[in-house]
Image (cartoon, rainbow, N blue to C red; front, side, top):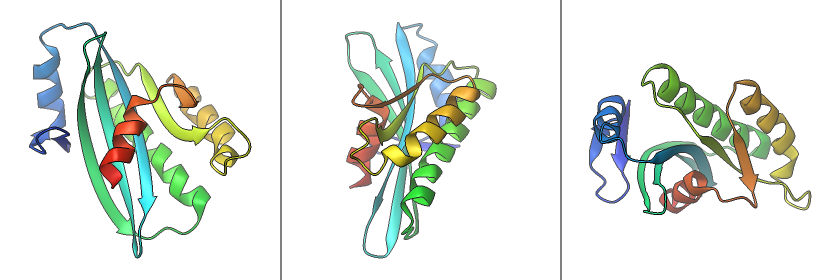
Length: 150
């Protein structure tokens, strides 16, 4: 699985890079997330792995995908969850790396449209054994994904 480093845009093979990087035994947590953005004729998805070092910053790896524009909000947001779950599952099952949190760029406040997807998405992700967080919590993985979408 090919990902890029946020700082340098250098492409890496995710599994081998992560295993080598994490071999230093730092105190870290792994956060996974995805965000999407619609543009004129396309939808851009960015899926991220954030390695958070306790009180010492973070290292971000990402994958960007461009697909034909998805107009239906539910479909576009559910695809974010599918990408996050696929990545979190890959990290745990194929890499042996524990995912600390799956970030969802959905809002707990019913005023926001993304709230319509929140219960179904958090139930689905939780049922797979992952800890799920949504806005207004600290969401490093979706923050990074949002920055990289633009």
